Amino acid sequence: MENYYTPKEISAKLKLNTRTIYKWIREGRVRAVKLGDVWRISESEIQRLLGGKQEAGQ
Image 1: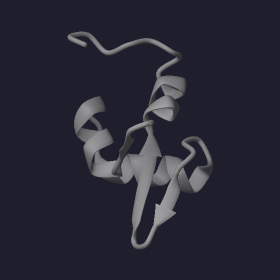
Image 2: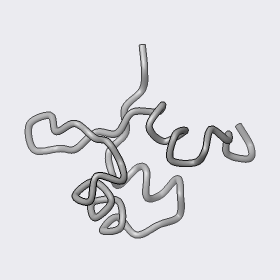
Image 3: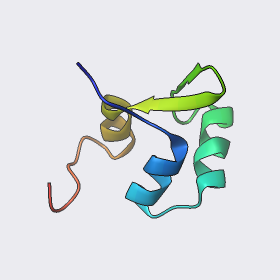
Image 4: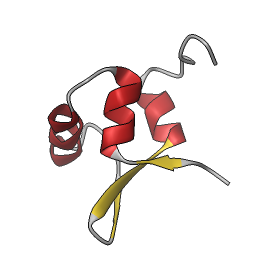
């Protein structure tokens, strides 16, 4: 089963402002699903965004 993360978790992982992640969702740059009030981004989407590269330390 794939892991899903909130924009806040993604922003911390990528060291970006949370508003940047929400902007990317609005622009369609990042695919996300909204469950209730919370956006969720899949782990595979994060890898696609990063060009398929693993983060250092994983």
